[in-house]
Length: 253
Image (tube, helix red, strand yellow):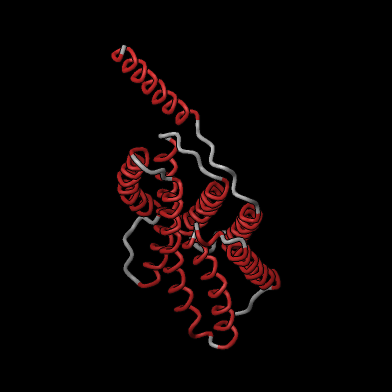
């Protein structure tokens, strides 16, 4: 098993980008608000080193390490989605409404992701390799569906995403869609259908997302701005309070 010059360059670039992003998250204290995202980036730094060492010195361990890391990668991505959701949620009734919507939509999303996975990979897996392929497609599909559920749950109530939250959510959405496309193409057309070029496309897309995260998290967080819907609700509350104060004033006189 040999590594091409391009693959080696992409491998090295990925390590450097993850290390740079981790440095930004730690040095600028972004980890306090996004602990799961920071853990995910640190995990990618460690994973790259471990896989490189396994590839060079213990190739028999490479496959098991790779797929074990892929499982942890998926778990951390799901936790990041919930972390973004938590960062967006305001306290009180608005937050509870959004959380309720998200629970309903995400539950339905699991069913949708399962159905899409079966539609693309049109048989249940039996062998170990088939289970790996099926789980990869299902995890990428579920990530996209959960992101959509989060977006619908928050935008329906007019909740505004801050700069860092928006950057994290946008990056996850772009990466999730690319990963879904590549995994779907693998399963539907077979691994030989432009396989290496699809891999390069996925890697380059993810590295572009990491660069976007580095630039976004290096900037200061913008102050939270109320959306038009929130302004309308606050204006209604203020009008009701003024009306009640006027009514109480009349009663006193």
